[in-house]
Image 1 (cartoon, rainbow, N blue to C red):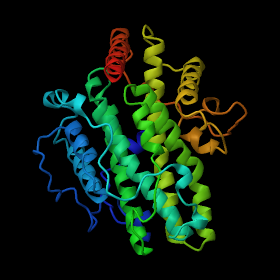
Image 2 (image 1 turned 135 degrees about the vertical axis):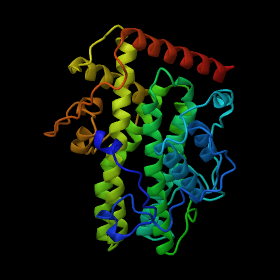
Image 3 (image 1 turned 60 degrees about the vertical axis):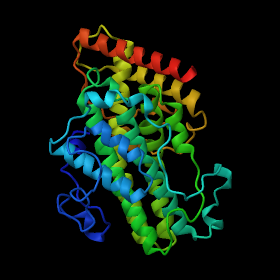
Length: 366
């Protein structure tokens, strides 16, 4: 996770075979960080820019606004959240703006790769583009919706999810580019809305959001990515397979960030008086039990294998989180604590989280 955080701003917005060795700081012809013509003022905070992405329907425009926001943050030009934004957080839309197509249907109505009018390889890339579009919005919704927790959650929480959004926007552009090369467009076949349903179900609870989005949905990408790449190679599409492999590799950092923050918030809520900076097995047992409780309630069918246990372990997710009999020979990543362990600050974090959840839950039921 530390290595992922230390990565320089990645300006590669178009896919090329040489991307695997290119300097990520090298400008691409499709980079839009400096040319984004947003109506936002230059000093608009990160949370305000997150909302602007959510309110933009065009996928390419979402990607441009995303990269512009993260680039400004990385250069130290904007703050995470300003006072003006906090006055508007309650009017944040429940759903992001989306293009007219694809038509959203139930998962059973989405054609299978075998029956898709796009053909099997383009259909897979179309599905991945839909996942990446959702991933951009999910990361920004996490920043925008929980910005009121700034001060008890450190700025690094919001910086991390802005970084995730920037990575996802790059993945989205790769998929859109590949669809064009295959002669199809995003929206040519219907898609489902399951990923955003997960966001709606966790809008009032940051711990639930961490469980469902990075620790469950994105971890599923670690499970599926290698198999998907092999399938594309079997269909003779090595370019799409390379894109899938790269995306899967980069998703590991996203899962690691989500797992680290999930564990951190669990620790703060379960042991507010603890002042220790050391983690022990009890800490991970609490995180595992809490994760399973959330997933059994919010996504009960998602704890079925197969699991990529080794990559999950590299991302900090112990097999006990999702399967009683899963084993891995890879040491499970155990990052240091992310929030200062001053008992007073930890207690404040717990109280603030519980207070915000109670208020937002009451408002949603009013």
